[in-house]
Length: 306
Ligand code: SF4
Image (cartoon, rainbow, N blue to C red; front, side, top):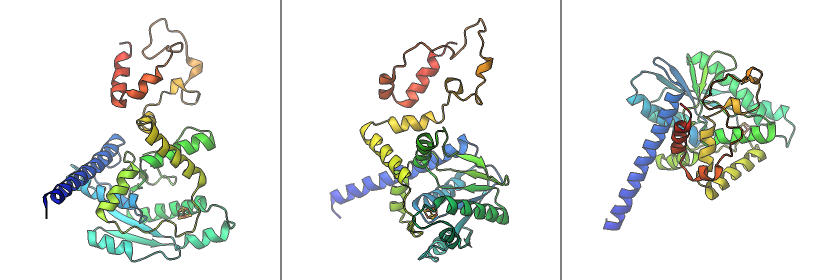
């Protein structure tokens, strides 16, 4: 092997190492920030055969090795009966990892095809059926946590979909109680960028199962939002980062939702209020754009009257 090849390989090895560390750090941070996993938990890791869930399983297995707590992992795949679904891929992969797993076969595909008129989007019914089945399986497997592989871009896209098309301010929570009240759903990859998961899938050579087997069209609105975010990311470095960070810094008294803040109770107290009246100030958004978010947060904190 000549010298340049060796250098290139070494560079690649360092990049992969950095990627690996970044994924574990961000997932560990999200798990800690939202109290996702506790000692004695049994976590059902939902695997679709896509890059995100493969990445999540890998990272959770690594984090478990180093965690000061003990928790179980059981991988679950729902075979929804899509034509051409390669049934052998996930069992073979999971056996090779020596991970306990369960494959649940339920033909939701035929139900969805029968109920939804041709040409209409099937995803809403399909995902509702899937959710119900996964909750039942979690109960049968004794899992108290259900881990889904949604990442940072999924959260941002859902935020904008709600903002633009549903007129409300919400996204995908990193942790929530399942609607049957029996489990807690967690999203350990909430802080991880999709492009890192893509790169990781390439490095690890996951046996990806195509996600278009159901024949459903891509959701057009989601596609538009995805491309808008992609465009912003390229043209305005830091913007998408700022938006994502803002989801964790909500100021209910400076929005219009009366159920979150008791505006009726606002009254003059006669004493200065920290973070109170900035109603007549002009926000310096131009300078915000150039300041890294972490510095901005520190500066804003320091600006508050003591
Ligand atoms: S893309 Fe296909 S499998 Fe996925 S939710 Fe939609 S209908 Fe179901």
